[in-house]
Amino acid sequence: MKTMPINVQEQTNYIRLLISLNWDGDAAWTAITTRNDYLMNLLNKIKDHFKNKEDQENLEKGKRKGKEAEGEGCWSTTRMVWCAAACGALASELSALWPLARRYFAGELADNRRNQSATIASRRV
Image 1 (cartoon, one colour):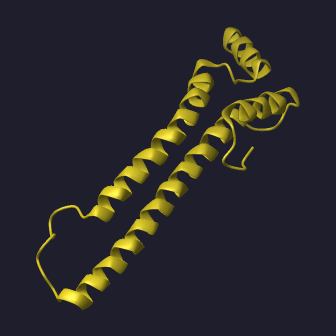
Image 2 (spheres, rainbow, N blue to C red):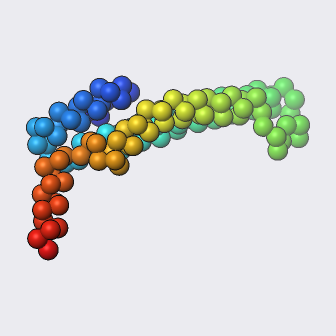
């Protein structure tokens, strides 16, 4: 379940299987945090890739033209492509994270036995 990327439906099946096996822990929350970590790592890789590309372009420009103020303060083509890539990755991964989180917070991916025992315990108090 911690291997990413994974299809949301497949991950949901793993969560339900772990719940049925009385797994110690919150399988749904583990899946959500794993997706979050994957998304953050993906965004960092994109950022690093384009940062390296921009640094390389700046070195090449520096060798050709010396230091020019042209382009300072505005976005370069590399930064626009970086922004588009980051937005694309975010959009594709959030579309997978959202249904999982929605099901989790709606209680659809909760261990019903734990919920029932918590409800019974709260009634006793």
